[in-house]
Image (cartoon, rainbow, N blue to C red; front, side, top):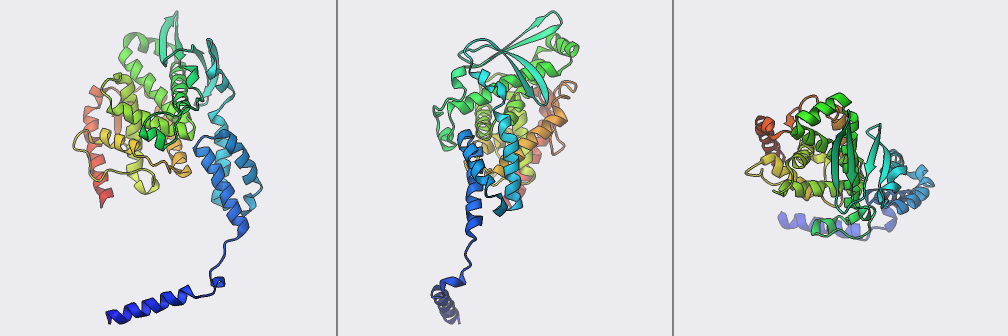
Length: 355
C-alpha cells in the first residue's frame, strides 16, 4: 500500500511536469512593474537614500493605478514622513561656527545654541530666571559617508553619518526638554534636584532621537542603546534613559511577536536582569531586513509613548507607564519593585512565545 501510494504520487508529479505552460497563470506585467517601483521606494526610504528616493517616487507615481491599496498607502506615508528627517534647519548642523538653530520638535518651536566640537556635549547654566542650554556635536559626522566599524554596523550598512544623525536629534531633544518645562518648575528642578533633572532631560533627548531619526539612523540608535546597556562606564542618567526606551521596545514586541518578523527572540529568558538583557538581545539581533511596517509601527509607538508620558514625566518624578500598563521609574531606587514585576512579565511572555 505504501509503495502504491508513492507510485501514484510520482505519476502525479510527472503529469504536472509535462503539463502545458499555459496552465500556469502569468502575472500581469503592469502589476509586476508597479510592484518593482513600489519596492524601490520602500528600499530607498528604509536605507535613508534621499537621492534614490526622489527618483523612485517619480517612477512609482506613474504606476500607482496598478498598485494595491496597501502599497498606495505606504507611498503616501513615505511622502509625508521623509521630509521630516531633513528639515530646512538641517544644513546648519554641518556648520563649523557657533549657530543658533530654530527647530520644530514634537510640534513645538525650539531654539538651540549649537557650538561645533570634537565630541557631543551639553552644557547648562542659569542666567537670571532662565536655563540656558548649549549643545555640541562634531559637524564632520553629519551625513558622513564613511562606513561605521563593527560587524553589526556593517550588516545594517551604517555610516558615521547615521550615528551623527542620532547625536544631532538627541542633543536637540535635550533643548526641547528645557523649552517644554515651565520656567519656574525648570529652575526649581535644576537647582534642587540635579539628578532627577539629568534623568528627565536625557530620557526626552533619547526618545526624541529614536523617534525623529530617519529609518536607517533609527536602527543605528537601537544598536547604540543596546551597546550602552551592556556598558558599565556610561553615565547613569543616560543609561537609564536608554533602559526606559528598551523597556518600551520589549513590552511592544512581546505583546505580539508576530507583528515583528525582523526581531529575533531569545529561546529562553535570561537568568539575570531579565527585562534589560532581553532588550539588549532584541536590539542587537534586529534583522537588516527590517520592514517598512515595523519601522512605521516602532515610530508610531515612540510617538504615542511620548504623548502619554513625555511632558508628564517631570511632574511624576520620572514615572512612565508602558503599553502593558506596567510602570517604569527613571530613578533606579524608585524602580526596584516595578522592575521585579516587569521581569516576571517578560519571562512569562517569552515562555508563551517559545510554545
